[in-house]
Image (cartoon, rainbow, N blue to C red; front, side):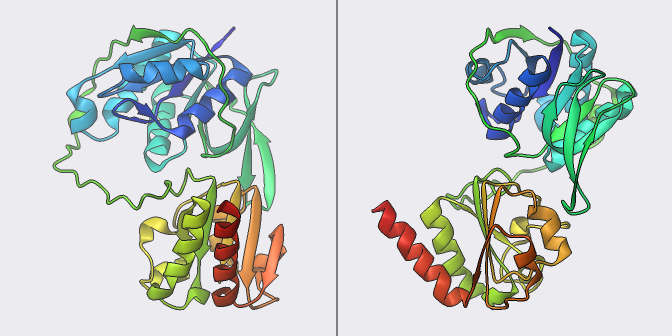
Length: 320
C-alpha cells in the first residue's frame, strides 16, 4: 500500500491530539509514516504506533530549536524524497501552514489548506474544505505533484489502530536558508489549565454582549464546568476585554469543536468564518434577530447574565 507522510506536532515527545487525528485520516488513503523532529522525537514512537504509524522517521538537531521553520521544511523535504508518499499531511496551525506552503513550493506540488475531511480517490486523495465562511462545502484534489494538505484540528476522531511503528533515523542536510532566522529567546505561555483553543472539543465564547472584561468571569465559569476552552469575538478583543490569543474569527483563530457556545455574540461574518464548521452550535443572545440564530443548532433568546449562570449551575449539579 502507498505511504502517507504525517508531520508530528509534539512537545518533548508528547504527541498533540491533532497529529493523532491526522493518523486516522492518513489510514484512509495509505499507510501512515510519521515524521518526528527535535528533542523527544523518538519518544513519540509508542503513541504514534498505537494510532497506526507503520514507521516513525526521527531526527534531532539543534537547528530545530534554534531557528524558525526552515529546518523543519528541510527535514520534511528529505522525508518526501526518502519515501515518495502519495500525500503529506500537516496540522493546520500557523506554523504547520507555513511549513506546508514552503514544502509545496520546494517539491513543485499543489497544496490544500484547512481541510476538514479526507478520502481516497481514483486520482489521489480528495480533501473536503469549508469555503466562504463555511457557506459552501467543497471537495478538491491536487492535480500536480505530491499533495500537501493541512487539516484543521477536531476534523477526525482519534482511533487506536496498532501498527509496527518502527523507528528509523532520517538523514537531513540543512539548506543555507535554515539559519536565516534565529530564535533569541522564549517565554513560556502562562497556563490557564484549560484546553488549547484550536484543539478543544468544547469552546465557550463571549462577545460584545458580555459588556466588560470583569464579566468574562461568567464565561470562564461555564467553560470550566464543561472542561472547555474560552474564546472571544473580535469586538470583545478590540475592546480589551480578553486577549487576542483567544479571538475566534477570520482575523483570529479558526475552531471546529464538537460543541460551540456563543454568548452575547451577534454573528458577524468575520466571527462565523472562524467557528461555522463546529459540529453543534448553541447561541445565547437577547436579540432574537441576531444573525447568529441563522446558524445555530440550538438558540436561547435571553439575557446571558441570567442564562449562562443557570446553565453553569445545571452542569455542575449534573456533574455532582
